[in-house]
Length: 210
Image (cartoon, rainbow, N blue to C red; front, side, top):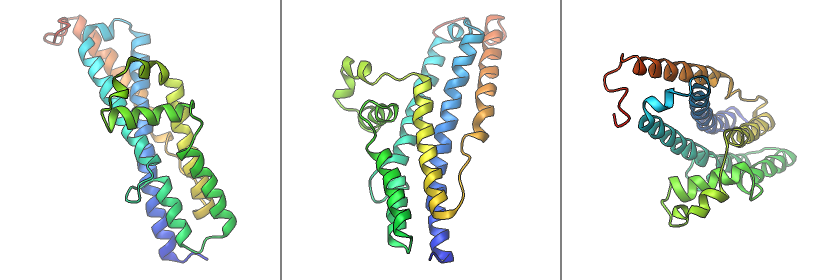
């Protein structure tokens, strides 16, 4: 049976993983907001194309790293893998440990063509390490992701953590809910800024090189 120290340690590790997943959801909502702004006001991205492109790339880069933290297999990283390792050291029922292992294995070794696998390849080969493979045009074709697939990948991590925390601690996480407002806020901000730029309210906004 787990004592209070065991539970606190497991809770601390699970909270750290939840923090990374929450960041991933936040970055997803920014991307979603940018997409919504472009759909609602197609001229908005054209007002500052370089800024749109830079923000989009930077947010995706941050998203890759957040996902990588959750799926990392190093022993010194706050991840689902080290959460399982901690549970194995404690007096947790064998059936629960076996279930946690199955969940973690599904995250560490997902189907090769799944959205999560492709997202992890972007992280490993492009964001964390600038590999020659990632510079090959074929890499972009083979690992192409749309926003719906990104959402699916993050949701799979979120579900995995909640399944594990339920088995070990008796509660689930609600990482996505508090980030929902970000998409609408981002869309409103970008749409408003684009309108101001076209109206001449922002200095240099009509200059695509600004």
